[in-house]
Amino acid sequence: MCGIVGLFLKDQSLAPQLGNMLTDMLITMTDRGPDSAGIAIYGEESGGKTKVTLQSPNPKDDFAGLAEELGQHLGVAVSQTDNDTHTVLDIPAGQFEAARAALAEIRPSVRIMSRGEMLEIYKEVGLPKDVAARFDISSMSGTHGIGHTRMATESAVTTMGAHPFNTGPDQCLVHNGSLSNHNSLRRKLRREGVVIQTENDTEVGAAYLTWKMMNGATLGEALESSLEDLDGFFTFVVGTKDGFGVVRDPIACKPAVMAETDQYVAFGSEYRALVNLPGIEDARIWEPEPATVYFWSHNDSPTTTEKAA
Amino acid sequence: MQTYDLEANGLRGLNATLQSQSTETNQTSWEVVNPKGSHAIAVGLDAPIEVTVKGSTGYYCAGMNQQATVKVEGSVGPGVAENMMSGQVIVDGDASQYAGATGHGGLLVIKGNASSRCGISMKGIDIVVHGNIGHMSAFMAQAGNLVVCGDAGDALGDSLYEARLFVRGSVKSLGADCVEKEMRPEHLEILKDLLDRAGADASPEEFKRYGSARQLYNFDIDNSAAY
Image 1: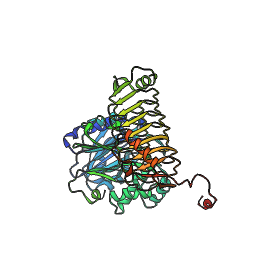
Image 2: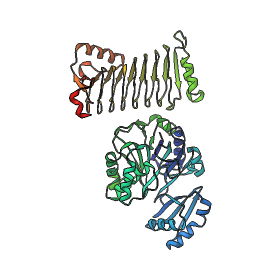
Image 3: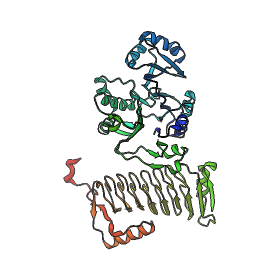
Image 4: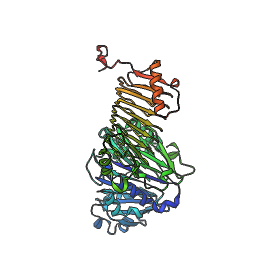
């Protein structure tokens, strides 16, 4: 099954409550998938720096003195904010690829969860309430965020198999469904040089979007072509720096409900996830159409990526 | 009027209470408050009682209904009135996928829109949708009537058996073996009765009728190359 929630704020006075609202929505979806849970949160911009969220099975050893060591390696200033099994590094813009190479050398067991100016991804095996509590998600503020609770069907229950998946700078993807052509597509994408770390089907979906965009497609075009190239069932929710989008496969058997008010746009696998949102009684509520790309952006003059979506 | 607070008293209590009403009950009128999108509200009822749900529901509301009238003052999730045998289910808002699936009898009224697979495999139920319906509706529908006052999505009536489909608006595409058929006086009569009972403000003459071309009933040796 899997459960997805998403919240995009139009009214920024709600920003301090974003983590709290998303956590509540995600916990409501627990019985759609209790295996693992994750949240992508778009917080404050890091002032031209790149945030890199890392995860480690041994945070105590791996995170000790990490910023300093990495900074020396790169010859730049790096800072870190630890949060349980995750830490968020602030590195100067343009240093991500160098940092990735350096990390592979100095901390080989550390995994990169996300990168971007605003995006942080936190995910672990366990119930949504436990995962949200260990990272204190409910105290986080932000402009928009996406959550996922997983019932695994296509690959093992591991941290790396949990959603959301980072697809590019400030981009992420969550998925409800199962892709049936992920093995052949994974082989094809690996031949093209795309890094795919697990046997998970959704990671292939995420890598596919990344690859499309690397080759000049906009996010909207990448999502449109996913309707042709991905075989299987999916409701995808994607996050970008300025907004979030929704697309369902043409069969659309995986559930989806959306609500919009003057204050927010919200997504839930079920209406239950939305019932505690402010003003839900008067919200416009609808089911997204199959094979249709929806997108909302904070940006008054959206980039070509967002416009196309 | 009996009032049941679903949030305070739980789902099992609600369904056990409603299911234990006999045909001779004096408690004929029930109100369910705080549904908050919960699943399986008012399922398996078998008494001529009237249940009003004050808000939107999740999956399988009023499933397997017999005799009862269930009214939802909100929208419903997937599988409303699934396998209904008799009685009535009336939804003020929209319905998610497979509304009225496999229903054997009774009347399902959706005052908003219904999404995909409305009336899939229906076996005698009557469904009246005031708005539009989504793709693959009435797939393998065997008996009963599906009335759509708005438009129908792709592949309407695919692999249809003997259910009658009436659509007032456009049909995006017809499924395999579904064809438009002549509207005869007896169909107008059936339609008028259903529209009246569903409180739909539409005239039977505005509808078109669709049904099975009956080409998929039996194996046809001329089609063997297609398999």
